[in-house]
Structures are given as structure tokens and as C-alpha cells.
Image (cartoon, rainbow, N blue to C red; front, side):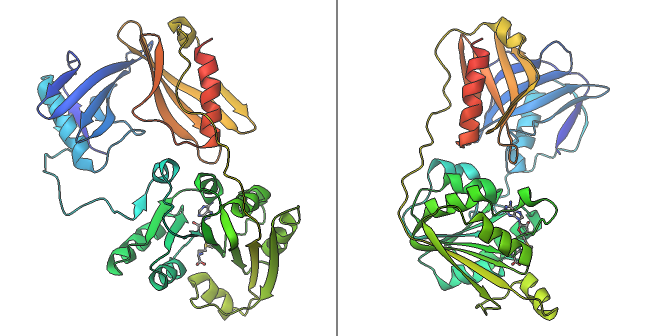
Length: 390
Ligand SMILES: C[S@@+](CC[C@H](N)C(=O)[O-])C[C@H]1O[C@@H](n2cnc3c(N)ncnc32)[C@H](O)[C@@H]1O
């Protein structure tokens, strides 16, 4: 991680422009001389530089707001050191210019992309846990008018798929590094033609980690259009029986089960099971009715009532656990005499989000951006709003 080892750390009078980098405000770790966070704006990104006052005086990036690509961070670090006249003892930072060939990959999307404006101009098909991506790439190439979204949590598989998207010049395939169990809540109702779940991890000893659950099946029914299908393909007899049992609650779909059905493209896992002459089961759920739009309500604004900084200073560092997820106040910072900043972890247990809230002049706002608009984050926000207003 790029960092500067400073002889001494000098503060700036903020806000300040240092060439083309803007330093906006400084938030000091409360009740400690551990260091400070410096809000920085450069090339349209806002993020924190972190000054750590330990055996060494290090200036580096904040993990939560870290900008990409790396040259943005390096440039901002050097700009701060120069502008504040903080002498550098040593560093691993060069001031190489932006590498214009290293563009961020277009097909790799963040969850905010889907949460804020889900693409709705064509049929969508989703593959969950695409692994080697053989099936996903084959489907995208064969159906250029359909938008494919591939979900994976295994980074090397994601990189491999992104490389193939470039080689095969596919422009109807988006990749997302996100837990599939939480993704469907961002999908509008009735727009998905197919959801593929091929050879999911069976988790025989930890069934709560399985992708398929009652909540997942209900959400699948909501996002599928009439006639759309959820296709589970597995070598695990346990898993397919579990899926059928989970599905037996009242629903708007029908299902059928097939054994050892051939499909157009065989995945790496399927190859392996076939060599071992294992049975392969297909369970297909077909959606038979339209669903209403979900009612995720609320936003991330805070109540307008005055905020007492003493209440903020006394905020408990406890974790507030609820059935929808949790809220945890991690650290407190001070901005000048009366401003405060909180670092939080919040949302669902499976995909917690870390973020900052700035409290100044009697009002609060998330910084540098809102959390992802999930139902768990919205509920955590309501709880936080109550806590900071005492
Ligand atoms: C057994 S592999 C199967 C890969 C591929 N579908 C195939 O047939 O070869 C299961 C994949 O699901 C991914 N996975 C597991 N849990 C997931 C989750 N909650 N969300 C997204 N992907 C997940 C794993 O990283 C793994 O690559």
C-alpha cells in the first residue's frame, strides 16, 4: 500500500488547494494522539488520507474510502507532503503519471451501480457463482440482445472472466463481486428471464450458508418475469432435496426435476463429476405470476433536529444487533472544536458496510458518499438517526 514515512507531520489551514488536489477538512482521532484523517478531492474522487502517529509518522490511504486507480492516491500523498512542508524520510511512492492504458474494466460493476439505477432496457439473465465462467461466457456470446450479470465472490474467477470478456469482445456481460444472497433485493420485479445456479457449494455442514434459501426463492419469484426460470444444477442429492423442501411453501411457481440432462456447455465441476459417473440433478422453477415492486422505503438523510455533541461523545461502542443486521460505532473523530465524525460498520451480517458520518453545525451527513441502498442499511440508518439525536 503506498505510504510516506515523514520526519514530521505538519497541518494545513483547510480547505486548501495544492496544485490540482483539494484538501477539505481534517478529522483527528478523538481522545488520542493516534493521528488524523484528511479529506481529499482529486480527479472527481473524494477520499481520506490517514496520518498515523506511531513509532513512525506515516501518511497513507484510508482503507474504506481508498481511491482507484492507485496513481490518484500517490499524487495526493505527495501533494500533501509538499504543500504542508512535511519532510519525507522514505517512501514507496513514485510520481508516475496516469497510465492511460490501464483503464478500469468497464464490465466490472459495483453494487452501487445496480442499487442506484438498475439497467432495465432489455431482458436480464443472472448467473450465480459462475466459477470458470464457461457457461456464462457461452450464454452471453450466444444471446447478444440479452444482458447477463455474473455474480462471484472468488477474485481469481472474476479476473479470469474479465480477461475473457475483453478477448471475446462481449458488451452484454457485467460482472459483480457480491454475495448472491443479498443481490436480488436490488433487482426490479419481473425483469429477469433466467437465474442460473450451477453447482453451488453444498455446505452440507453449514446449510445457512447455501445460496438457496426460502428468502432467496421468494426474491427469485419476484424478479423473474412470467415464464422466467430459476435453474439449479447440482451433483448433490442433499442439495436438490433441500431446494425442493425449501420450495414447498405457497408460491407462484411450478417446478420440475430432471436427472442427467445434457446441456450445451459443461463446466469444470460438471466434467469432474461426469468422470466419476455421479448423477446430476436439474431443478427448474418456472415463475407463473407477476409480482409487485418491492417497497424499500426511506433514504439516508438525517432528521433536522439539533444534535448535541455530548450525545455523540457518549455514543456506546457496542454493537446493536437486530433481526435485519447490525450497527456498530467503531471510532470517533473530532473536526475542530465542535465538529465530530463517526466511523461505522452497518447493515447485514453477511455483507457489512463501513462508512463515515460527519456531524457539524447541528446536522449530520454520510461522507464521502451514501451507503448502498439496501434494506438492512436503511434500517441501520434509522437506528443511527435515533442514537445521534439522543
Ligand atoms: C462449486 S463452484 C461452481 C462454479 C460454476 N458454477 C461451475 O459450474 O463450474 C461454486 C462457486 O460459487 C461461488 N459462490 C459461493 N457462494 C457464493 C455467494 N454467496 N455469492 C456468489 N458466489 C458464490 C464460489 O466462489 C464458487 O466459485
